Image 1 (cartoon, rainbow, N blue to C red):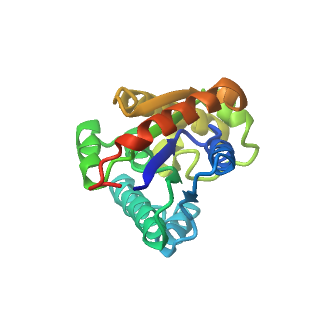
Image 2 (image 1 turned 90 degrees about the horizontal axis):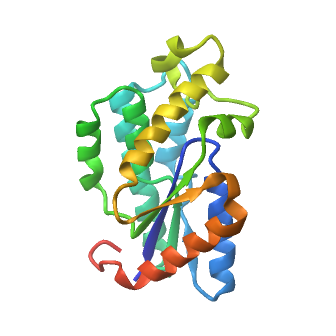
Length: 212
């Protein structure tokens, strides 16, 4: 029975670093660990659209592109084998918080959480937008909020700060769920990784078989 772990956070939070560290540590302990591939056709097409201005999806379309992509990545990974753990860099919460930050009604966005199976545990890598910006010298159109946030500042950096701050607030609101653990993204390679491992291994035995 696979325990699905979602790693969430704003752009530049350190999600990829945490995924790599967790995978290495859990594998070293003898667990089999899968990581969702972002090279799935649906994800590649969604990513391509996010990198354009003429095909950039509106808020509603982006929400469902993101949810469909997350489900596809999860399903494909579990169809290949059944590892002890499947770690997903972004899952359900990311498209939802992006949509809320883009101005969609939070009640409607949060209502889509039931469309996908829940993760056993969700790890929120929490950092300020200012720290995230310092980690990302090159910003994409999507990371700066796309067309919705063009009026938030004259530069991509100003728009990034405004958009990612709104997304962070949405993440923190969602993190009130008991299955979430909030980690300090400014200090991932010390106590935060240990806390994440404790949460993951502690939840492994409690994953409902119908979802995982």
